[in-house]
Image (cartoon, rainbow, N blue to C red; front, side, top):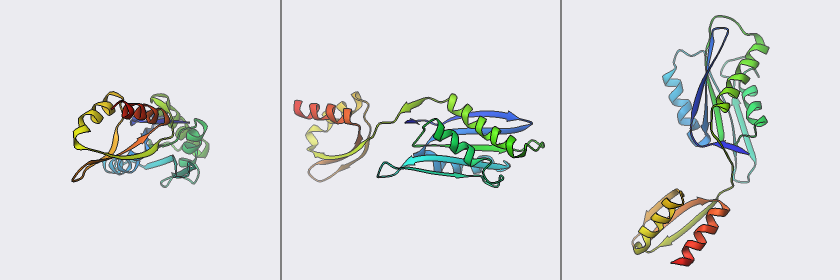
Length: 187
């Protein structure tokens, strides 16, 4: 399975209609959709499709045609995400109508191609399951832990400064956990 870690956009034009597609990480999907609606108030349609994993590692999918004929925009976009085995990501496509009707088949092809183009121009990464790890440390070890996480390019979800210790929360892959355990043993 693949995913994206940063938003990419690509323009696609067919019969004077402009399609601007965005491939974005699922965590940025809602805010990007909201921003695009403000940024493109004169767009004919802003459709989307996404695939994400729930807490049981099951794929959850959704799409919207935003007023396009049913099944002509969101569904083909979702089909491309499925076909390319992309998860934890969303595609949003902004359409400006160019005055020439595309017909049902033409719209399906246009939205499919717009989605494929943005995926081609994006950097995709292999999905690795991550596990929530929480732990606390004394204040005196904070710099060592920060240095380790920075050097290993591990970002933390949260760090709370308690009265007598620091409580950390991280999402780690199996490899990250092994390196982290080795690091803790070296202290």
